[in-house]
Image 1 (cartoon, rainbow, N blue to C red):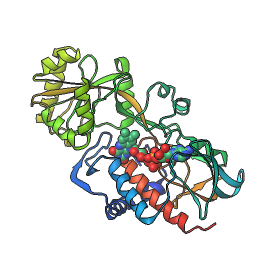
Image 2 (cartoon, helix red, strand yellow):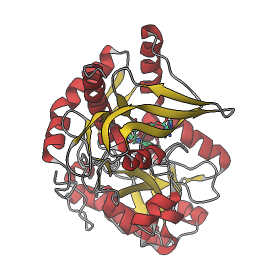
Image 3 (cartoon, helix red, strand yellow):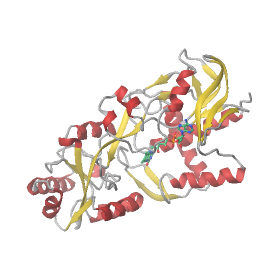
Length: 381
Ligand SMILES: Cc1cc2nc3c(=O)[nH]c(=O)nc-3n(C[C@H](O)[C@H](O)[C@H](O)COP(=O)(O)OP(=O)(O)OC[C@H]3O[C@@H](n4cnc5c(N)ncnc54)[C@H](O)[C@@H]3O)c2cc1C
């Protein structure tokens, strides 16, 4: 609640925190294997994130696809929902969806039970994000191209209420034109941000919205992420292949001393040296001039080679979406349940308030996805 400035719905937040452990167990029961390693993810505020074994997104999808195959659950690929069909535009039960398939075929799919909207956020939509925050339209996105918000607007068309559409989260990503972006910022206890002058400008364990605003305020809105050899090794837990590709593409720089690294990336060597030395001293004294917490003031940047990757901010997560209740039923603009309609995941609003804590999207989608699915199955048309 605090990390979202009290703008989340307390009932939904409570249920998320209570049921997230069940979601982890459910994932394990359905074939997802987790690493033992627990860490503080970027924007995570505490050491509490875990990764699956295998690619972070793909490991979940692969395991759950296997379950779909076993249970004979059909999945229609290359099929786009273009309309949600309700008895009347703003009243009555939701009956199903209209879809368009690759090649131009249109189908009307009638729901035997109910419709569950699980269409994700709208961080890939320049215009929708810029309407809320004009800085956003220019930024680019970390998301897949399907994060358009099309279904969100279809839901609004049939009366769904929304909340928090103007809360848009960013995280670092590659600068425009750089094909293979390095990622050195996942483990907060390992990296420093410096600007193009080689100076630190923000405590790296801040909230994602604070980090976004600080980086957008720097010259060219660009920062260098700096780690040492141990930090680079640690990063392999989740970002090994990306960084291998960045090394090959020449977008990830390294050198045997901080001064040589500064020369390679074109920042004043004395500033970068001072930033790293001051940080290393802070690890000894437990007092960081920029206020980094003790829990992430544990690893010095001392072991060569030293690495640097250039980043800017990218739109990453849209906290707002349709209003749901505890049972994941969609609520209309007047506060009434829309019969036959459920929603879960990034298409919904009110769970993360103004700012999603790092790692909480997985907790959200698997918790509310399960709740929506169970209730939809109990709700015959
Ligand atoms: C690079 C990256 C890294 C991330 N890392 C983490 C992390 O480490 N931890 C964490 O908690 N969160 C992370 N997140 C956030 C998290 O992945 C998302 O919030 C989450 O996947 C959203 O899940 P969802 O099921 O709601 O939507 P999605 O996963 O976006 O799925 C929605 C699907 O609906 C489809 N769709 C949309 N519109 C239509 C339509 N009209 N017709 C048919 N299909 C449609 C989309 O194409 C998509 O396949 C990350 C996000 C990104 C982009």
